[in-house]
Image 1 (cartoon, rainbow, N blue to C red):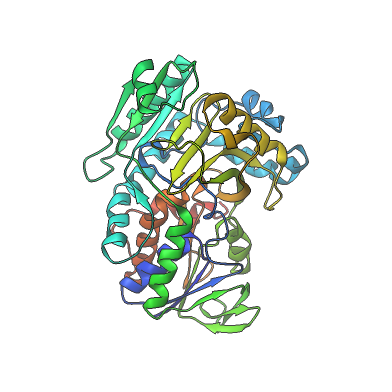
Image 2: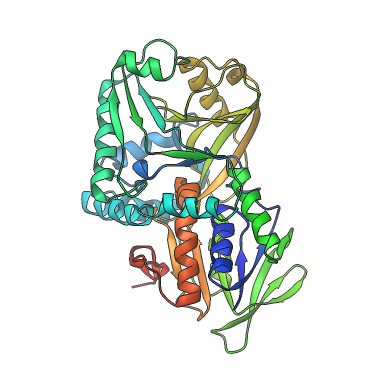
Length: 421
């Protein structure tokens, strides 16, 4: 079976890798360079213990109205509100306890195999930087510390995740927090250390999977855009129409992040997909290095140590699908890091980046076959969990394409949930 995977980020490449492993003949079509999209500059956390839907019961219309500050943790650009109005209404409708708990269980079901799938990649020769250092959450505000601890406990209770044995986490007092991360500035009162979490360097993951695919004979078309789909009967795609001509395929997987919505529309189905933009700054050879990934709970800013590199990141910006970098968002992240951590380069050094996280209103991944075509599948909508869920949803999608079903229950993630009622 010849399968075209559209999208060369972590999700698309993992899907292609598992397709190859299951006996299919995948090829990848990427409009830019492999790994150059949202997969490149993110925090690289593999974090089942903090995998939650973004609509929560605590989000009210009043709190959403406070998102017009361009330097706040969540920012909705006023000029984008008319375009996003329908999406925001659907998002707000999911801010219920019932929807949140249902989404929590669904994400936990995917994460039940997350660590196993990454281990499988490592064991089968995919080379990437992968560390088992845990994640430290640090708080000045005691109430926020208690809220995060309750959230992690709720995720842990939703399903058995991690290395087959659940979430390992413990609360830290002030002294224990500073012992675990001496670079923290004064004023932190509590910490939470989630030992079961992992992190990886995203660009090494995409490069490693791409290398393994090429070594196995799979073609990766870079700098090639998909412009449509050729069908024989209106329902079955026989070829991808691209900027370099038609490429034959027996099946297609759309895994192009925030741009998947436009591709799905070309295949006759509307997915309410927008971009939740995130920002990061990457510092090479930092003067000081963190001991493990760090989350500054009061500022909603994270930081990850890689080999020879440090990356700090954060914010969620809803401004439509575009790659525009708003310097005010970067400055807000820098201020938080300068205030809270002894990282000299945070004030002005490093490479700034913005990426488009793909998001649908319930913020659950969209994984399954499009109802408008017999052989077109999607794997997108991972919000801030693209790295975490890339291997598990890639595996599940490949099973669906090759075997007609997945071992996981993909019902909560089906694109059919967006079919007009």
